[in-house]
Image (cartoon, rainbow, N blue to C red; front, side):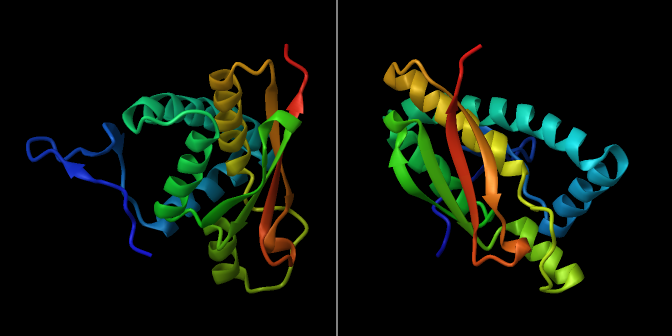
Length: 181
């Protein structure tokens, strides 16, 4: 599958953009090594909390910018988001339960960059901790944007409920409605 992500490079600055948003293209091992260094430095729980908030904000911003650019709304934006994540090499991501009005979505991820890198370094033996917690804030932020766009009085959180690094065939994320603050 060749990515359909449009990339423009400014000849004067070298800045890459896709759909008007600045991008950085880096090798997977570079990103994962930096990710793991932060886990080791501050601890998994603290890092996951910060990632959740930052990822949430970034996903919401991305949806807000992509919707008008592609004339999309509602769940079409969420599907577009998952498609773009897949095209950018994070893994193959799809929605397996697609009814935001019910207050719950399920997202499946195959070939996660985090699982692949872990297995490359440590082998295929299952481990206890999930490896893909970075996606949690992204999926919650995108779901909240959709809810706001559809005029639903809902707020969502996300948790990885199954990780391929734990010996499963794929990763599963549950995006669930939570009480609004």
